[in-house]
Length: 514
Image 1 (cartoon, rainbow, N blue to C red):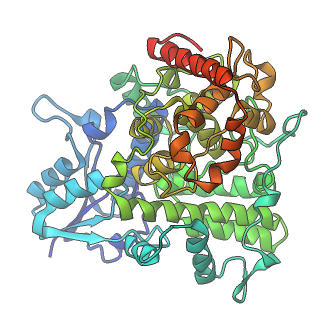
Image 2: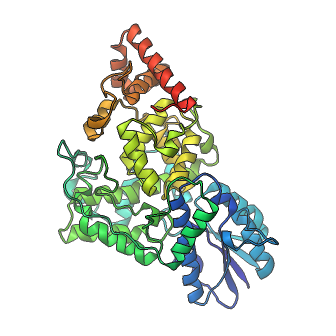
């Protein structure tokens, strides 16, 4: 029986169970650099990372004696263009190879999954992705009968199942998390000297992709120069070792801290490699556990890191498959502004936003607090459409795959789901950013001012956001403290805040710098 195995750009796991019975005489692989996936506005380094990793994977499988049908963007001729979609690439290979069955690992994108399923027809064999610890069915069983889906309720059984940081049936250290130890800022002196993240010099394969991206996508955001991401499993393992040795010990303590001009700080920067499946979450977590067991990293750092992967990452994916496709259209705050153009260019005077956008536009990365509590915070309070924010996020972040971006953006960041993912919107004024970073020291705006020419845009939009949605938020007990502060403002001040917020939105809509 002949089998055609479809591999997408985020399924680059050579140890996947889909290859367990691979027969070189009867089986083949198909991979597609699809026009539909490449042409939406996106970072040059994102395009380079995906296509370089895919081509390295192709070369490695061919070196093992596996047949690979590979459709590259720059292989197109006058007679035959590159496939528009991944499904079209699959059908081209199927026409030539004539398989009895078409094997597909569950994809990271509902849209792609539907297209492949429809195109494969009765030859389809769907394989669950063993890269993850749980399946969509596992999450459905967890969700059944629950009024509220809470991460902690999902995470603890997985800790027990894996045995990680467990003493019998109880957590090591006597508690399940150490969040209270993981909220320190760097203070006025800023961060200490942090070892530079290990870069990876592009080889001939990656350089050829860089040249293709510059040639085919000259107007894409970002630059191809300076690309130094891991694009093979060996490089991903080197990146893991670098993190464990130099940054994991202080990861927990400064997990939420921000410092101007610093991109990586103590973060692992492994999310892109994991989301392309260049390295498994099991290998990553076990390396962190080993560091704890031999005394090289404290429990607050290791538990906080494992929680992000075993807990949050699995929870987000489960939620995605549980609620799709309806989840993508959720917009409970009725937010319909476009994402301001400066989010694609970085041209703003707001120091915190400019610093975060500089990280994104330079490296295709910003850590989770910058995403949630700077960029996401601004866009939610500005009133940007949640799905438009998701599209922006998908375009600029190297680690953004639909399954992880959509719930994190629409739900966690923009509160578009109305509370499925989080218990309340992550709303805050510039005072929060001032506490957690050093950005406000060099900013022309004043974080505590909510109206007038010196008003911090984040602060003005914060109070206007609360006032706009006051009726809805009164129903949420977790918003009581913030609404009490809103109640202290007199009508005249609220009117001035409203005018300032309106002026900010008008400037953004016109493309005027703020």
